[in-house]
Image 1 (cartoon, chains in turn red, orange):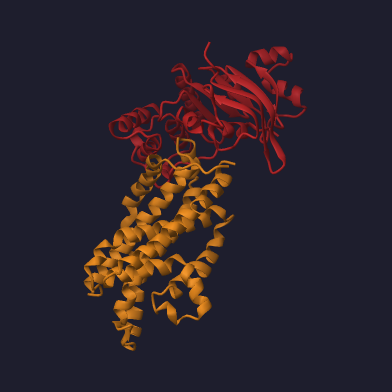
Image 2 (cartoon, each protein chain N blue to C red):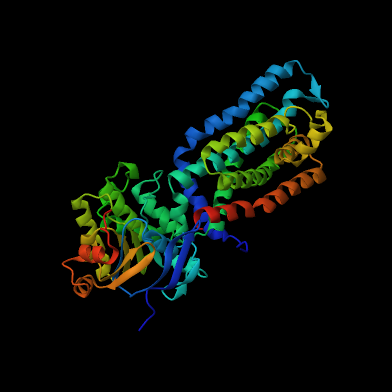
Length: 246
Length: 257
């Protein structure tokens, strides 16, 4: 049995005296899709940021692929793909250049980079728009480009923070199919969402978070059974006393 | 926290991203920044200069021309590390995008500074060519100027990025330019010898990087005393090295706290 893809023990993070993540433990297995479900402010994004290095770990341990993120950050990041919640595409560059430049940040040059970029343009259905600047793309296309960008370095683990927020149903479905294809390829996926349907549709296992803590974890069906509720939304209400979308 | 040294190979990845963008837009950006000192040369050198015979035996136009190469470097680096860096950091969120790859904060800072210095040396060198065409350069040593302009660019870029890393809002650039960059431009020894300043002002001027870069440029354009050029350059290098930790620490606090 290899090391878990991601392992957290007693993970804690404070911002200006406010506890954003309050001592959480979880293990993400290799090649599964693992979800963080919870309302805004639950600590999901902070947890993701600690994984991909945009937030420092205050207390506890956090390992990605068996590597301590605090000590071996550069190495961890070379194995990660990150789809941030806030779009940060390079508006000064075209679609293709966004991918090429990001490949450059990962140290890929020349034919290696160009070949990978062509693959990803095809995979994300953006081949026809390769020469467009990113502000000219639709919301769904921009999100697909963000995912393609995250895959440039052939990551073992991809972290997606609210990947479908703000997308229309059709774009959301296209994106789900993209994520299915990734999973089929053996990539470990971590995603945060506040959509129950999305969590149930995509995740092998998930944790329910509220106010920086993990309230429950397990497979979506298992949680529904364990708490004797009709669906995930009711599980959340049962555990927290409030609805997820408030 | 100890200061991690940058990985130059990775810093150059950041530099190459900026070069790629610049290669598309350079025609539009070159003219304004390059016109600025050119206008000063015309107004002061060919306008005011006709009322002034010479300074230290040098015709006024020739006195100010090399200093304007230095100021082109200063303005170029200052703009790049002010609004342009702010745009990349806050509007594009490009720094966040880079920092989830193997690029670390110290690499990012180094790449940005190297880039601003590159841009600055382009402006300074173009200006050097212009003044040479006007016949305002006396010495072949002027051909050795670009590496020194690059050093000056590194110094101004480090100061500029340090400022950007510390300010909460881009409104603060007004202070930076009116209280720091413009006074250096006016009193850094470009338009009159700095020994005309009162003693206390000379002390302040001596501590500014522009003063030393102006000295280097003027020496090289008129036939240098090697020792003076080296002393001024050493001062610029020391200031750059001494300040480098400031943007690294502040950016780390800002971006990956």
